[in-house]
Image 1: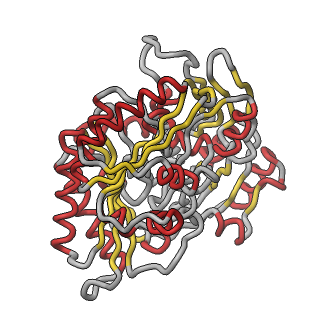
Image 2: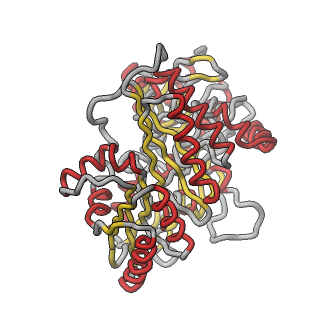
Length: 479
């Protein structure tokens, strides 16, 4: 990089020399994520890229972020906003073009808890588990417990529109946003309207929810909060097939029930997934075949008990065997057991793809993907979790593994073939590139097909707000 010493000096004048780093150790930390992206490689327009930042900077507030972006614009160098680095394997926070990694964790203050309005305002760098601890002290919860709960930041969660374990009740984190403070690429600090649903023009907060940092840096957010529930009730059912489980889940939603937890794991998930093998051992559950559903209802006792009665009747009609509440409670208590760190031996290839679609296509897409991939890779084990259920449809999260290499293919070749096959089927059945893992570098090439002519609107928005393309380039849109 030209003028590196000059840029370094300018950045130090903004945050102090202590908070600008360019040593190899720090750079290497912020070039990796928790997922397997580094194992599978990074490509932009089909060409491999090697990621390496030039600086890591730690601003303290929105004003410092503003000055950093002005410097970046002047020198036309990239800026990658960084939260917790939990972005699985899409590469959404990897500095593929070098430049500045803007680490947000010094911006971690809870500004105000409004118990009357049921909102909290906090800086974007606070980790979700720390925000939850502060809310719990006051008798509240934010309800967002994703896989990266112990490292995901508030701003990172919003920028990727993540979904938590209890999404059927609390929604995705983007649904909780009441208003945002954002630093635009030119350094201007804006605040979107911090009010309930309004008709005062478009809801500008939506521009930045799921934007992966390509349109600016989220520095503060006001989100909904909820009183801690009076009662929690767990339920678990084992169905003879995933078809029965899917039908029961759809009926639970159609009846207007609002479980906090509603997960369906297919027959292979129940048989092979490490969390269920561990559960069967610890709870001494019988080795029965089937598809398991895990539920939790929470809230006032009367509502919880009524929900239990209706849900039990629905599951019984679909031949669900009542396993009691312990399996669902055990699963939630151990929900992060298998997430960090990696446990057990790794097969030749292991990967995931996930999507969301309307209920009319949900089951069709599930069987189409399994049949298509297993016709190509006969030894592949495919497990599916339908983990997020909404009013109109649900997600499908496929976990796949191959113990041995198919022919002479490398893991990268296998991954690219499987992903391409999966996305073709997602689009055929009205599915999305991602439900909650985001797009990043890895899946950006599929967005023109996903959006169709509307893709140009996204490109135009990016070019208008960020004409020098400094904000997280290479992610979502490639220009």
